[in-house]
Image (cartoon, rainbow over the protein chains, first blue to last red):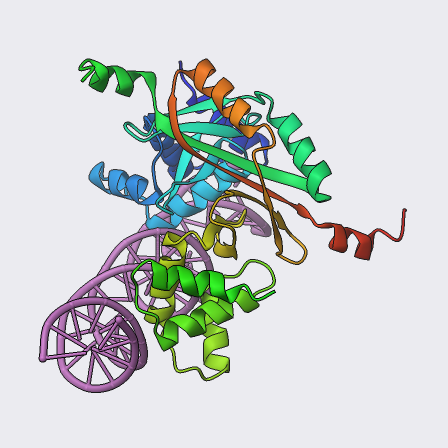
Amino acid sequence: MTESPTALTAIGRAGYRLTGPRRAVAELVVGQEGHFTAADLVAEARARRLGIGRATIFRALDLLLELGVLERLDLPSGEHAYVRCEPIHHHHVVCSGCGRAAEIDDAGLRAVVDTIAERTGYEIDSHRLELFGRCPDCRARSEGVPS
Amino acid sequence: MTESPTALTAIGRAGYRLTGPRRAVAELVVGQEGHFTAADLVAEARARRLGIGRATIFRALDLLLELGVLERLDLPSGEHAYVRCEPIHHHHVVCSGCGRAAEIDDAGLRAVVDTIAERTGYEIDSHRLELFGRCPDCRARSEGVPS
DNA sequence: GTTTTTGCAAACCATTTGCAGGGTC
DNA sequence: GACCCTGCAAATGGTTTGCAAAAAC
């Protein structure tokens, strides 16, 4: 169940130095349940007295983004948050209750993108789909009362 | 071809006061070709010596967002930008060349969202799809040289 | 030993807010 | 005339940067 190796080996393999602070940030990231902000990590690092500076956390996040271990989310509120993800899939359903994110595969989206490209004449390089809702757990927690 | 009325009548109809600064911002917005940032408008307002403060511009943008005349985009860079749009459609293809955005309708997306809801068990409240690519004009401008 | 990385603090940028004066309905 | 809106300047919050010391290779 250790997912840290993914992040850590990615760092090493990419030719970046495997330093203490980076390990620490990777661990913090792995410990996050749902989505989280840079500020969350900064706070947690301080709370645990890890002695890691803001800047280092931001730099580590950038690195993890670049390696595809994390993805940056833009929440409806405009906040920037991050979620862990597999380096391949690239869409998430984010729970507005607990912040947890589920990864989703194509689900027919490619066809939609192709349709749009055709209709608009644009050559589409990239896209981002973000979905927001309530996860099964959060629904169960509140739906026991059917009015 | 005047699109200003849309924005202006929307403001009035919604019960907000139709003031000089708001008119001015609406005009600036209408004059934008592609997407733009709040900073762009601030700079332009200052260049034209309109005497409108930053705060007012931000407040006017919020208003236009609320009225559905504008939509906020999160560019791949993480920047916040705005585009004019019809109050109904809610997805855009943004040109990375000129910044112009085309609106797109469903194009099968609803089915995709339903599929995702079914597969993940999430109850999906909202979603955001942003596409980035090159518009026909920008493609034509550079594609004259087929290798 | 060389090069990368870190921590700190200051700088920076975008956005928000408090408030007195001015404009709109 | 009452209330909404504006400008200003200061506060805020998030992110970046410069640089000397420390760590990794």
